[in-house]
Length: 93
Image 1 (cartoon, rainbow, N blue to C red):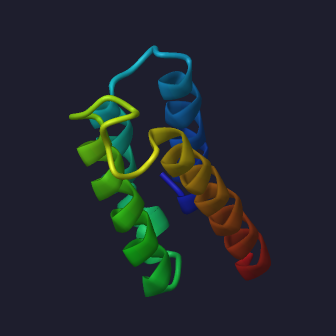
Image 2 (cartoon, helix red, strand yellow):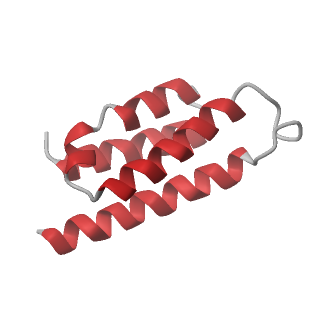
């Protein structure tokens, strides 16, 4: 599986999560398992992704209002990360 394949799979998992079709753990596990994608990007991308995923997993334990960060905001950050990763991979190709 290529980095672009894994990025596409991650986009699909995010859409499924937003449609309440999968749980947080399935989304975060898919992102963490995208090793080809991670190795194709600069290390900073991995740091940012892990930060988003850690917070997303934590936010799943609380309601939106009781958590110190917004799950909606984290999902938006993940979408931005996916877009930036796609741009980086496109320029590298």
